[in-house]
Image 1 (cartoon, rainbow, N blue to C red):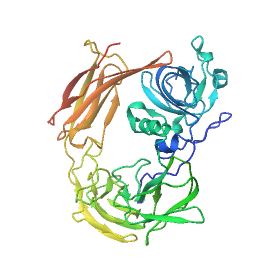
Image 2 (image 1 turned 90 degrees about the vertical axis):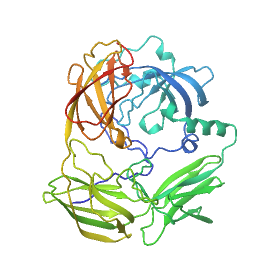
Image 3 (image 1 turned 180 degrees about the horizontal axis):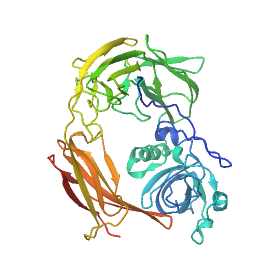
Image 4 (image 1 turned 135 degrees about the vertical axis):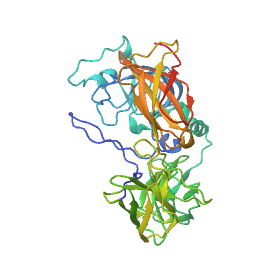
Length: 453
């Protein structure tokens, strides 16, 4: 069995759809404001006040969002207090925005309503409010980097400082042996002591990565460079070509390869039991997420390849919480593994712990005035003891009752919400959280939404 994992990708622009042919949309890690802002033609913050996404979940539609401009940084005229955002109509890079939310928009060049709505597929044309054609349209699809304003405080602060002429040119990032997701994650395995080289072809400067794999070059002159990292016996990172603009930045993740392998058997396991490789941190604790995972075969055997070097624990539900689908108590090989860059560890054996009891919890969802929610309800639960790791969510199958299968020995934060798409407008009502204590047997939880419809 080979390890299954998710690796970060280099910066790739989204691929779009022409003549009804869809190409996969692929975006890179979320770039910092100091890299996005200098390249974006239009940048502003604004509140979405209207939208006509049809709720189908498909990108084969012409969609517009009306946005009330709150703070303009670049590309908008002084008279543009309201604009339209095209979220990538008819492209696989389509994204959805929420009416009522404010965003930091990184957007493309100006267009108009006619150009945005000319392709409408086989369905009827969407009805547009009177006078909307007078507003300019700016594209901001999923790869644009636009984000909720509540999560963009650092971006906005940097943009303001840049406009005041206070920003410094910088090339920075981190070197990893393994990176779990596209964004930095507790399951990542950084590489300390790697030599990172920045060169313009004539002169080179270098720095060494720190304990978290981080590196930084300050005060870099504007120009084109190549960036790479080495540390024997790891495989060197790919050499990346970068353009550095004055007062801006470039952030990159450099990955060096290691070829360790681990194999063994989980006694008592059958097919598809998840085995995790969890990093031991410098303080002796464990990473919150597994770096790599794989599945057992019918005989309980597992094998992981192309592994990073370092100290790890191997087991079942070591980093992951128990769930109704994976109810086994934490099971692990008793010793900490020390993997060399190309080392092989085989013959590991450990017992799968017994399945722990599961309970059925019926979550009944009510409006704020006590009426039952007739349709559109959803409930979710996250274990208090593992709140950073897992959230279970299900929709009601008609009526207001959502049935969840939860572990008896965990307490849970339980919440609910309600969605509707009517007239092309998304409506969303949330609840507060309640705590469901650990306990035996089935139970019922009543939750009121913070509003009525």
